[in-house]
Length: 74
Image (spheres, rainbow, N blue to C red):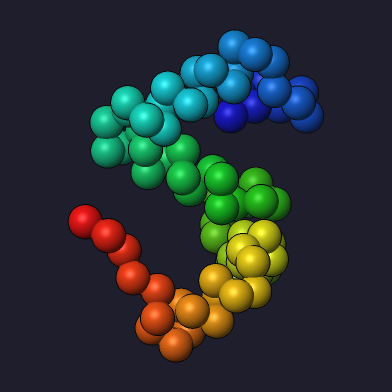
């Protein structure tokens, strides 16, 4: 969401980023999600990038996913 690369988000950056995530078309959404996962900003999502994301998921949630106990309500 930090378009200028300042290392922080202004209120405008944050608002624009959220609008893109929630109202953007498929291409905008994919680009935004890709940028979220590409922590080292090298244009690729590698194993280490995924490990960073997974490190923020509570352990009990990961265990539920691994044992197929996680159910979504429709």
